[in-house]
Image (cartoon, rainbow, N blue to C red; front, side):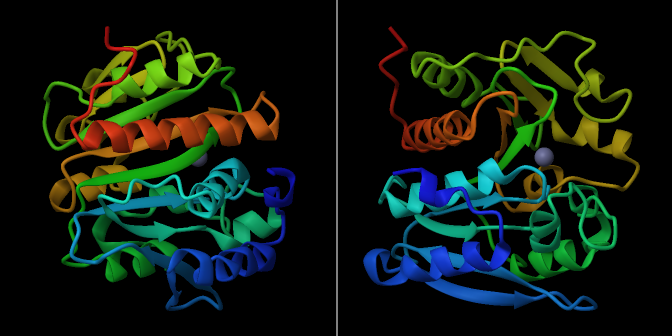
Length: 270
Ligand SMILES: [Zn+2]
């Protein structure tokens, strides 16, 4: 049942995650945000000796489908047990509570991951992640302008994309549209398109080339691929679809990315 997951209060999100502990073995911690009266929830799932995948949601408070989808993926046991998981249920609690993109200070948290973090949330996340590395990083978003799903696949150098094709194929096969990414569709700061390769529903980003266009106001993915992971995926559900579709799209995308990480082809590969 999906309706009970459409939460709008942050306290209810925390309570829903706490309720999963007994059933899933999930370990939860609260990470203090220095300089702000808030904490971030951090969940760890699975055998810590296994390779680690990190999945986050809710860095933009007006994009709740990522928060709902991540909760439902854990609740429904859909995360591949060959990995352990470092899960951030909601990167921006004050924005989530207010339904705003920015946090309570009016800051877009996903432009504050440069230079060790310039928002309380980014500082807390980068500090908690220090010296950690991940097989894969996935961040869940919604796009208010999109009518179809799309993803960013960000890598530490120009290389052949591994996830864009199978993940978009899986979303299509599930019956959902892909966003057509025309040159007019805005994807990052002006100039960033020079470091991007666009196809239907996918943007493959060469991180070292794209980074300068952000002028230090960096999103998480560009920072993670410097040292912490060989690939950062950002999934964007189209806000024009109803909540259950946005949740379903993000679930399909995450499950397919984990299959691909495990070296499996998909039934769509032919
Ligand atoms: Zn977003």
